[in-house]
Image (cartoon, rainbow, N blue to C red; front, top):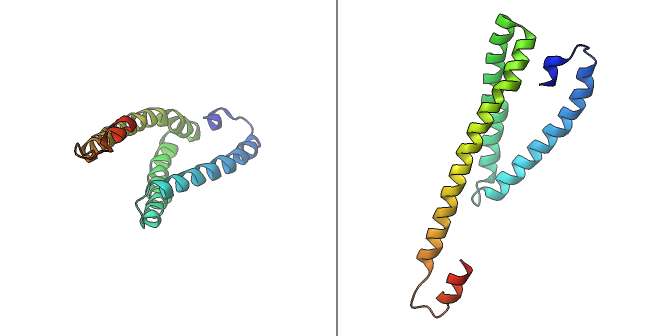
Length: 130
């Protein structure tokens, strides 16, 4: 969003210093999360899919759409569309992932209830924990 309002090209240098830090933190966070969340033996596949989406599909689509907007409307319009167009996409993804997270929590609780055996003398302890 800052690129839209820049009048001096040298400001890009300052902004790009932040880009290196934030991009590095994002990639470290994503790979750590995927490594922890992936099923045993599938961490490499998950990290490969992450790279395919970030570097391949995402970058390809962004380059094509950004190029068309740049040619037709100019650089400032391209940066505005990128900055303000990402907000609805982000909100939609947050909504989708929060719904999926709720479904996962419900299924875990149902699974825990199904695992409790009424004939087991320790089942009362497990019911209190769940």
